[in-house]
Image (cartoon, rainbow, N blue to C red; front, side, top):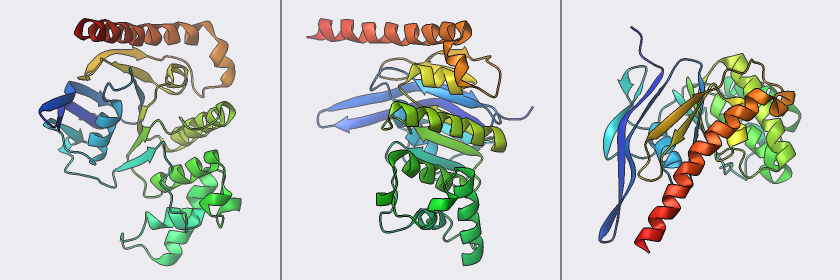
Length: 265
């Protein structure tokens, strides 16, 4: 039997803070199949971003492990592309230069780096802005450069931490359409962290809800809407029912957190 593309197994993450230790994750487990698009949602502070950072290899778990194709993840790797909410672009480099930078040190010649960068900028609709600096680009355009950079080295898994959270509503919608289009073309495995329930339901195959801190997986909701997704689906009864189911599960956690805070006060 083949392994899932990505497995998260009993993750525990503790942060020592002075005399006490904060447990961000405790027994968090989930798996993603090949070419699956899964969104992770939950209350603020439930450990979504911490989990994604561990999967990316940017933090080490206190316990548990992350497996890619059945192999443990020792740290950051080219098999995983990462896109954050902040654009993390080098301001002194052009859009093309930022994408090319991700390809340095890989034994790729300058000409091939340039061609690969332009190919990926074209994929996200920015080929005409290849020579523009980040200061000359809008927020949505900067995020498209970040996406092109993450895709440039052909990762098997794309990790996205609230990548559209800082964008206005219209730009956010356009980026959702772009992302799902790119995913449908390249068939990546995507783990997408978001606080926007409608966004999670609209773009995903599955939505996984986390408990309050210490975070673990509470529930998953399968999204059986047809693809490609179109914005007229946002008003459909099917999406509305899924939205309500996910939101109610998060609301339960939020109420439980408020009750816990009231008791400890």
